[in-house]
Length: 191
Image 1 (spheres, one colour):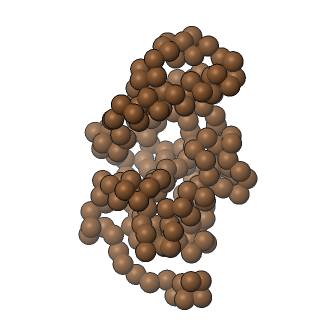
Image 2 (tube, helix red, strand yellow; image 1 turned 180 degrees about the vertical axis):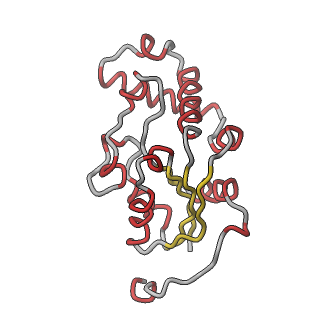
């Protein structure tokens, strides 16, 4: 069985969506094996997000692509045309956003859980997420609005993208003692 990490971000907690979000995963047959609400330190959050140049440049590039699509002046809005500088700004906004209120962290286990969780969550840009996904049903934020307002995209939730990312993130957020093995009786009927 695979495992993945999911974080309900501050906007999801503040909007009292925790129960509805968790139930989406459970209804699909995924099993919660660890769960906690925490107010992480900036240091803990800083260590959650990658610091490698490629990742930071990718953040900047994503924002610039949106500006290009909308015909907006990236230098006027972001103060730079350098992808790395823009990415560092966005990373800081992410840290500020994730530190604004408590978050709910949980570990899911199940068959193809990483792919399933990502499908349930929907694309990271809420205004492009399909209705029926968590982001499509509960958020309409966009990169253009976030960048103009100099803040992170309020997209409610994080779910690990790869097996390697899931393993590293689970270790970052949970100790082995906080993860529980148990069986769902309905799994025999489902798998």
